[in-house]
Length: 336
Ligand code: HPA
Ligand code: ZN
Image (cartoon, rainbow, N blue to C red; front, side):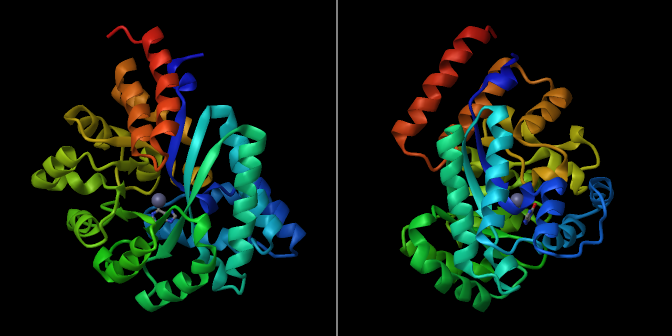
């Protein structure tokens, strides 16, 4: 087994609805008697040609329409764990988008209980630990976010963090300062998508106004030298998703992706999959795609794995267990 297969992996940027594989989507659509504009898996895959974040979100929200029952959300979540158990994924911090479902009259409880039971089954059957992050849709209003918050509060024990998702441009983090404050007051940690398609200014806002612990994507920090220096000094984790960025045309070619440059500058960058069923790969494929482009040394691959462990919301003991395992592998293979 090569190094990328062997390293213990921690996934920090994953939309559970973005793991919905076409086979399962068609199966659940049939079970729920829902018509989709696709007859076969090949038909579904043909639709996965994206030109921007919005062109993807349209298809992503459409596919989520077939999810109705607790069983559906359980099956979606369980299928993800089953898949990444083959990639030595050991811990996952996943985002879910309740507003995508409550807007179709699926109850918040149905969504959260189904995903939660999938997470418990993932722990039992594959020994993968996980945490759940509440996704706020930024193209909806602040008022909508507070409606969601009221639904989430009775189940807050299931949440580790709040997160900001969906169409970034024109929906700055500043719009959600109050809901982030409310979430932090209840003890949640905070992450936000920033600097994916939106400007580097949104990364500053996420840090200063939302007080996030991590930035999702953050690739456009490269446009602001002062920001890059700050991210390095503070070791703010950036959860990058290389296959997502090329698939959504943030970069025309992987060679333009800043992950290697930022890693080599000493920033806390991590490798993640975002919406793996739509973007052509899970976490391991993301590692392989950047390795093929940037020819990382064994030490750099181990650094990426270490960054993810350290950037996770695990406690020190849990982090140390994964670090011990990574260090053993590193001692065996890293001679550079
Ligand atoms: N960006 C923003 N919001 C999202 C994404 C993404 O890549 N995937 C699902 N929601
Ligand atoms: Zn994302």
